[in-house]
Length: 235
Image 1 (cartoon, rainbow, N blue to C red):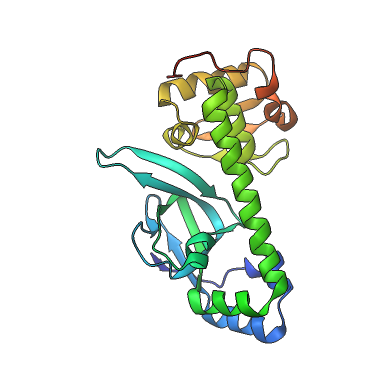
Image 2 (cartoon, rainbow, N blue to C red; image 1 turned 90 degrees about the vertical axis):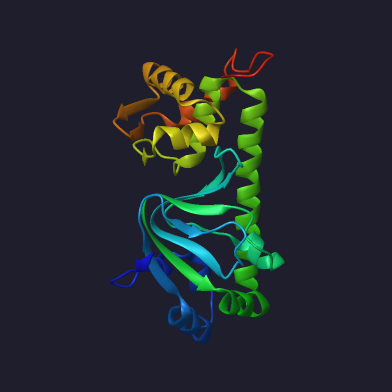
C-alpha cells in the first residue's frame, strides 16, 4: 500500500472520534496512518500480528480465508465509513483472516498503542466498540441463517440488503464472484438470482454495479412463501 494524500476526512465523520477529549483526538490525528490500497491488495494478512485497527475512508474491503486448494470464503466486509478488526486487537492475537481491497480503497490504520490507550481511557470509545461488535455479530448471524435456511434467490437478496446502507437508489460496485463467495453460491447461480431480483423490480444491473430499486422489498424478500430452501444443497 502507498501513503494517501491529502489527509482523509474520515475522522471528521466518525462518531467515536467526536466523543474523545481534545488530547485524545490530537493523539489519534498524530498517529493515524493513511494508505491507498489497489484492487486485490492485502490490507492485513492472516497470521500477522494485529498491529492496527482498520477504517475505510473510501472503497470496500472484505475479510476472507483461503483454503489449501485455493478456494476462498468471504467472512465479512467493511464498507465506506466503517471500522473493523478490533476482535484481534482486543484479544492481542494474530489475524485469523485476510483483509483485502475489493475495489480501490483508502484506508486508515490506527496503531495498537493508540487503540489500547483509548480502550483504557474512553468510555464512549468502549461503547462504540461494543456496538460495532454487536452489529457485526448480527450481520454474521443473518448471513449464516441465509446460507443454511434460504433458497438461493432469497440468499442473494439477504446479502445485498446487508451490503448496502439501506436506501432506495443505493448502488453496490462488487464483482459478481465476490458476491457469490459471500452468499456461498456459484457465480452462475448468483447471476441467475440477480436476474430474478431484477425481474421482480428490486434491483437494476449495470455491468458490475447493482443498484437497489426497492430496499424494503429486497430486505423482506427472504420471508416470502417458498423462500425456504428445499432439502439438499443449493448450487
